[in-house]
Image (cartoon, rainbow, N blue to C red; front, side, top):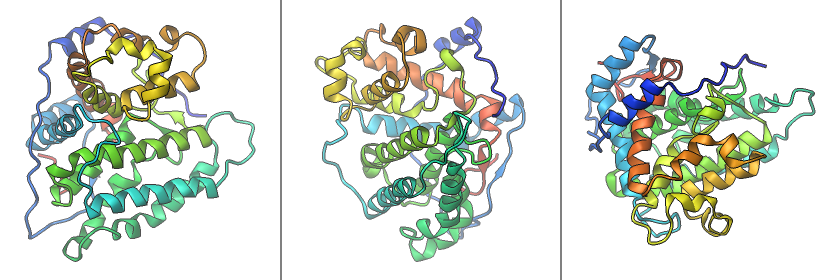
Length: 333
């Protein structure tokens, strides 16, 4: 088993810095224009200076601006609300369904180690080998050469096959893959609501299945001091869904009836229900941060706080962002 960094209690100074930081703002994604120079993307971040350079660049600002725009698009909407679904998004949903089906075809093997079932490597290999042909299901003729650049983001979105782990860095790669599709003009702002309610929901379903079936190790988890062992984005998108909800407040996560009736319609409640299913004991003890958030007075504050925290705790952390990729669509500037 990989050696995990010990869970570190949050540093009060960094907590204060997050509180004082400005809330990231949404941005429009500029569509890349031909002639294209698609390239195999590479890692560029090795130090805190590189992190600063990324966040000060147009690419860095635009990427987080895209995440904020996705979050705003689902504000006040349930997962099942009707929304425009483009051919591209329908194809992506079907790709994720294919990957989910493969989990059923590749059962976990019997082994003594509790974490990290090696059958996951077989699944991961099959996904990686098929990635290019899966992309060609929706890439138009003039963009087929983009596979060299977008496939690495995609194959790095579902965890690491040698470590058999998954964490917020892999989840961020999935967001970066979607961002690349927006840069290619394959996803437009009208699609954003369906990107969350159809695509991201399907991705989350797949990831939970992979986590449970193959017992994926949490990658770089903060243990009890983190938001969640594996995910961050569904908490952002899910808190946005609940802004100005008439009767569901942040404290409603403690109401079992609400969780049972609404977790399939609201991502945040779905995350809480999943945590309560897989973790035993008192909620305040195994998830103190989520417990703290439940006393925040309204979802608007929760959403803006989580956006600031995502930037500080995920996008500004070298151990996570050292794996982030740069090419012609997300430029290293």
